[in-house]
Image (cartoon, rainbow, N blue to C red; front, side):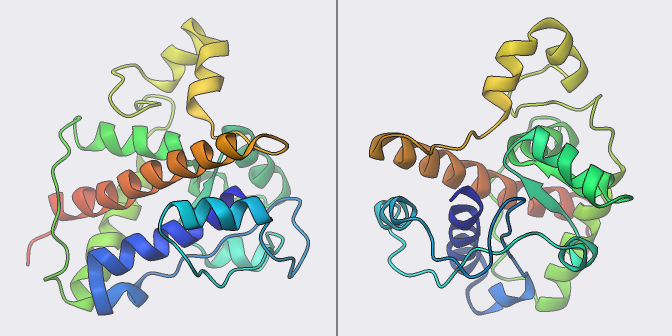
Length: 212
């Protein structure tokens, strides 16, 4: 449900952002408990249509060692899922981030100053260089000492210490199933917002240190 929505949203966003160069970036979804080749949940399809995504050829598949090894960054919907990835696939914990947590870290790297980035004029080689620069900056940054949530000037360590229950609620994108159709659509819109914020932020971080 959530990862399929995130993949479809990311593909749409990248196509709008980079046009014919969107294929420079590979986006794939997988689940820790998913079964292979199952179609998206009907509520998932309905939620995507509400976001203006009529078609997205994605079927579920379980996360594998090969997929984790090949990924520059692994993005989970919750912090707990990152802990599971770290437990099941040793040595990859530094590349796994919760979606909202990643946006908080990006916010830290940008000192909270996010601006709209026009990446459409970059060449394919420049896009790759920008994203490689961003990936290195993100992975080398301290997760505990970075902002946990974009726009909130508190680190993960501070939020976990001061507001542990609240922190868990606002820093994760919880599974909307079983839930109402409205709850599923709200979840999809939250994912759409965070994925857009993430992609814009990654380009901003990369361009900050990039010279043409």
